[in-house]
Length: 103
Image (cartoon, rainbow, N blue to C red; front, side):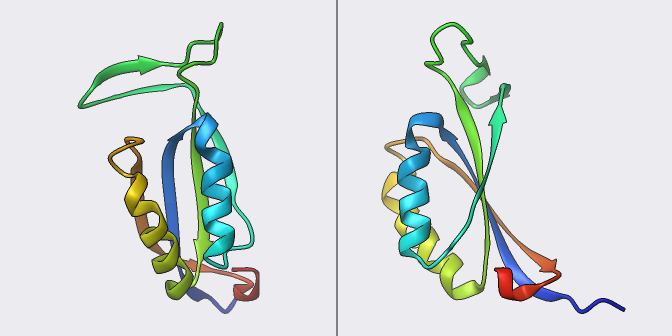
């Protein structure tokens, strides 16, 4: 059986212009990589929204990192000041990964 190792998965729904800042915060926390997913729409407490393809003003991304608990904690602490001011949606969960050294 393939060996699995426990890591933390953090996903942040973020306005596209803030992605570079999140990448910097992740790197400062010791996280060496991230993945971006383009998000085209959704709904929540603020109602229904969709990306404005003309101006890109409402473009959002899902910013994903996987890290050990120590680095995940550091990243979460760095995100805290941005939660309200940038209306971030943050999800954290435990995952099992193959090739733990990559994370």
